[in-house]
Length: 332
Image (cartoon, rainbow, N blue to C red; front, side, top):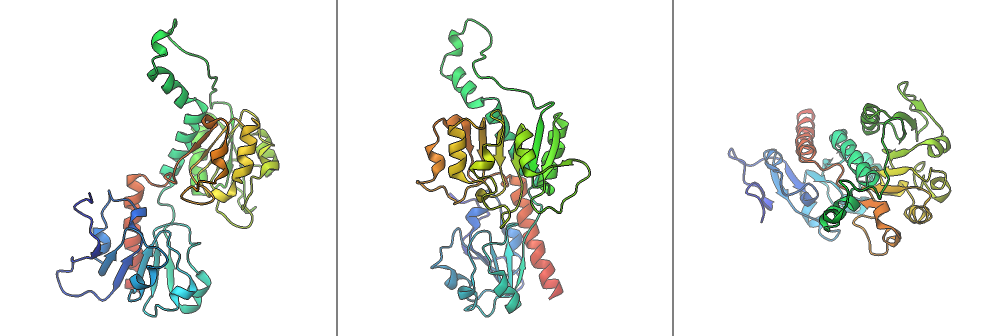
């Protein structure tokens, strides 16, 4: 059941007449049905769709002045047929679903939203680590199965885990999220080091290492980098097997930074202790993904690209998309 604040089709919130701008949101389901798009609907003649497949795109945006999307692909063949289009607003940081070369040539403005989910992505990074590190699924199942009732002692010590304090945390990509993770890791008593995927980051607060040294010496490695030609398959099998056998890997950045088949091979060979992934090479997960072939499923935690998606972050995202539209209309 949709919430009272949600509607499909054309909004009827203009109490003073017809708005000039036709605004279309193509994939609201990616934002969640537990938040409201009322603020967006006040900005023009607003239409919203839960999802939009490739065959539906043209009919839905052909008369639009402004298109909002998170993941729908807007390529040149489609955009060429939409002469009214003036602005594409991304409910996202990444812009790889937009033909940026063509929009630049056509004079179509493209605006994304950055730094709206730093806190929750950092939080999710630690949530994934603790689930893996402290064997929480195993211990929870041990208690709920009734085994703890039969225990001759007050505790159960079958799965070893260790403290963060005094361990080395390696950050791959020390941008806003990476720095937030570094701050929290330091508060837990970790020594934080980092690898700059661009080579341009020279943060004086933490030691900068080569990728090889970071992989060889870190107890925890978390990835917070962009996907580009330098980071595609950055962690292949040869690099993964450099990690400590007791180390954990967390990827909350982009799926293709870690080679998934290589990760499964490394985990199956016990070359690292465990991995947490919130992002995959293809989303949603496909049935033939090699990650499903892991031998010990407790060594791998996968969440469905939710690290960004706290209720606060999603509401913040809507507000910033709305502000981007206001700024565009004001400056136009």
